[in-house]
Every structure is written in C-alpha cells, then in structure tokens.
Image (cartoon, rainbow, N blue to C red; front, top):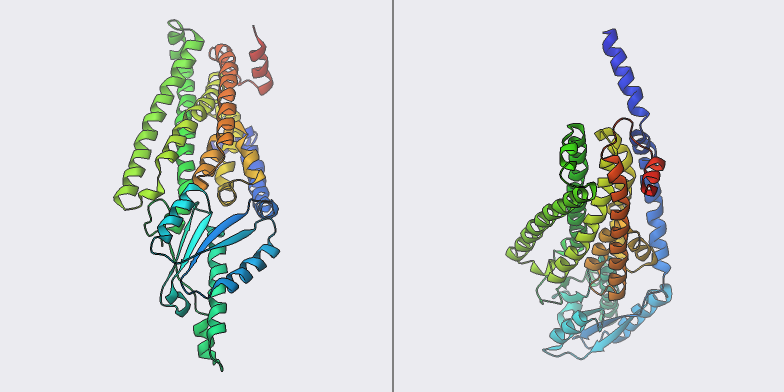
Length: 416
C-alpha cells in the first residue's frame, strides 16, 4: 500500500507541475470569467458604434398605420442614435412583396414588412423579410411594428374601453418570417437560421483542429518508435514535413467535402435549403485550406520537438486556448458581425478563418475588401509559419530527451 501511495503522490506532484495543468486550472477559468465579464461590455460597445441607416420598407394594407409607424421609429431613433432605422412606405400592390424581397436580397434595403388589413384585428400575420439572420435586429423591427399596430387599435376603439377589451387590443401581433431569396416561409426556423453561422464555424473548427491534431500525435509516435529515422534516410526533413502536411490537408479536405455535402443534402431534403447557400460553402473552402495549413505547420513544429504526448500538450495548449475564443464569443460576433471588435478579431491569423466564416454567414453583405485582406493576411501567415516550422522540424525531429522550451525552439529557427 505504501508503494502505491508513493507512486500516486509522485504522479500527482509531477502532473500539477506541468504547464498544461497550470494553464488549464488557472488561466482557463480566468479566461472564461473574463469573457463572461467582457460579453456585456462588448454588447454595450457594439450598441454605441455608429452603423449605416437601415431602411425598412412597409406595405401598409390598413391604410392607417403611417403616423403610428413614424412615431414608433422616431422614438426608437432618438433612443438609439447610432443604430437608426428609417421606414419607406410602399403602396399596397399584388407584386409589392415580391419586388421588396428582391430589393432586400440585392442589399438596397435592410428589411421589409407587409401589414395585412386584418392584422389590426389580430386575424392575420405580418410578413417580415430581412437580409441577414440577426435575430435581435429583426425582433426590434417586429416590436416597433407591433407597437404601431397596437396604437392603431386603441386609436380606432370606441369608448368606453373595458378591461377585456384592453387585453384584446394589446394582444400580440403574429409575424411570418420569410426568406428573401426563396420567398418561402421561414417562421419557426429563426433559431435554426441564427445557428447556421455557428454550424459553419464549428465545422471549420472540427475539420481544422481535430484533423491537424493527428499530425502532432503521429509525429510523436514515429519519433518514439524510431520510424522517423528510417523515413529521413529516404527524404529530407523539409520534404517529410511538407508531405505530412499535404497528406493531412487532403484528409481534411475530403472530410470537409463529406460533411458539407451531407449538411447541404440534409437541408435540401428538409425544405431548408435556404439555410446553406453555395457562397457559404465556397468561403468555407477558401478559409479552410490556409487555416488548416497554418494550424498544421504550428502543430508539426511542436510534434517534431516533443517526445511525449504530455510534452506536446504543454506546448500546444496555448494554441488550442486561442482557437476556442471564437467558440466562446460567437454569439456577440454573430449579433454584431461588423462591429470594431469583430473586425479586429478577424485579423488575428490563428482565429481568422473561424471569425470570418462566422461573419460571412451572419451577414451576406460582409465587405469584399475585408474578405480579400484577411485571406491575404492568412496566406502570408501560412508562409511564415511553414518557414519557421521547417527550421524547427529539421532540428527537433531527431532530438530526444527533455522537451525544449520556446526559447530553445526560437534558437533552432536562427540556425543556419
């Protein structure tokens, strides 16, 4: 029993002394608490950032809603001067809704609302279509239109108004959300539409991080079994590293095609094809390849320098820690895809692919200039990471014994 306790104590002490344990037990909880505290602050900052005027076209089939709409939107604009919305009244017409859907899709206006004549009596639902999946903004539009309709009900009611009548006048106004690209009814799928950006980001995260982790563990296994020495007798260290990275990229690409194809087929078969657009899949591929190459180069350098999984986890944990930041902040980024905070995160290379795919899926009108700039930055980072990884790989792949420190790995980079 004494020997068992001795082994247990040694294992406990050695484990709590590792950098992985210290980071996971101290810095990880601190990061979570910090993000929780920052989330509210981020929302406040985003709320106070100026945004372009958003135009909401309204088809008023009641013919009496105009003064109430101007009143509600005017009050909203005075309380939110940085997020102003203007209304554009459209004469009722049989083709008006179809025309407005096209205008929203082209980005000429932000959203449209059709208010049937029966909506004032609670006998019909209003129709809403918007150019993105930002739930909070759509709810604001719904609340403003609903308040205008309730005001119209009270203005049209004959006195005296009894309590039961008041409750009837204040009844909720139903809304039917439609997809502006297809014109199909999307009511009931608002949460699904909002979760779509997260699904794309999570797909990219799993394909990039999980598969590239296999490169790290594979290198360590080959070093431990001395297989790496046999391989180096036939190819150079640079050729070996490049081949391994390209092989893993091929596996990742194959899995991404399978997963994306499955998701696209599932959405189409369930009548929700509007959730997965071709342009989203194209950008997923554009950001996956450089994102995977960058992560693979970093993990290849770490795997070549370590001899055990525990040592590799200690060195790789900071990288993993950075990559989970988008997972923890995705809600705020999806709600405010063009805020300063979201734009700044887009230019941090390790997480650029995750942030950008989240922004693009949340807002189809993400500026093309930002997409090009982030892709250029990402590919430049890939080139730098592969160059550094190649220098670390050629030294570390044949090193055994104690795991190197980051300072030692930096010296390997400087070796000629």
